[in-house]
Amino acid sequence: MVCTKSGSCRTGWSGRLGARERRQKVAIANRCRPNLPLSTTNLRERTNSGRLSRFRPLERRGLDEAGLASAGRFNLMTAESVLHLAEIFCSRQGEGELAGTRSVFVRATGCNLRCWFCDTPYTSWEPKGDEVDLATVVGEIESYDCHHVVLTGGEPLLQPGIVPLSRTLRERGYHITVETAGTIDRPVEADLMSISPKLSNAAPHAENHWDIRHERDRFVPETVRRLVSDYPFQLKFVIDQTPDIDEVRRWLQHFPMVPADRVWLMPQGRTTEELARRGVWLEPLARSLGYHFCPRRHIEWYGNVRGT
Ligand code: SF4
View 1 (cartoon, helix red, strand yellow):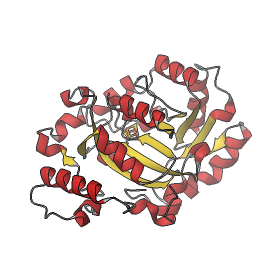
View 2: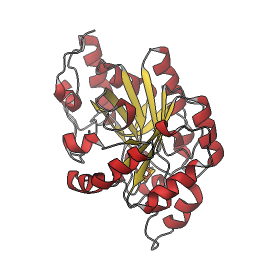
View 3: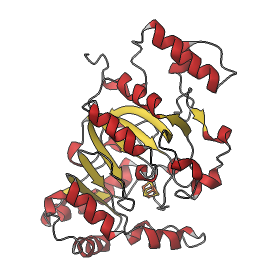
View 4: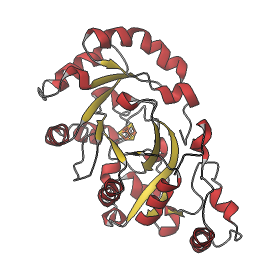
């Protein structure tokens, strides 16, 4: 198949469904959202939050936000046949060695950390999302006619269903990037393990218990060791201030097998102005140490908005 989309591909469906597929999708939507009129138009619509309208809201399954907030403990996560997703969309990768590559992003909801600067709080601090069966996820990915798939979050490796999803994508010949903080280990298929370890600079404020959990859970050396040994990988660190660089260097001393050219330093920031301000000193510093500078191009291109 030939891609029919231009740079606006990140907004939705290819719209090239056969009559039978359309009927099936209408049936699924009608089961999940009984108040919706029977129309394929509704299937292409997203809510303001970017939710795919035929996904089944988690709230309807009795999985409340408190349950998601303690990710790793909620029972529905044990099912391998479903995933809890915040969104699926097609956009361009903004970070790391594949920056600029058109990709389908499958964003899992739920995270075991709570970084104060998290740019996807709807997957961590206030997790939102839908329960989606594996076949629907694969069908959605295929509808974009795009070779690269990024499994991201939140923390995608919290969910057992990410493993069969990755295996299905492998069988179908996709290039798979997994974006993880490197604290959870699962036998997932990946062509690029994109690890973004969290430093002490990510710790949330002390007025809630998450500062303690964050410090306890953010560094799992045996998991990082396995991931960098068994996959092509990149390491992306978020840098807020210059002393963070010393922490990166201390962190890397635990993993002497990691060459400097697999390390990317990203400025902390959610706006182009914040990123540019830190980029002024971070870019030359990163290069002087043999690391890459990672400018977070998606914020430059689209702003910090969902679906990009
Ligand atoms: S690990 Fe990533 S998704 Fe989780 S809270 Fe930190 S920045 Fe957000």
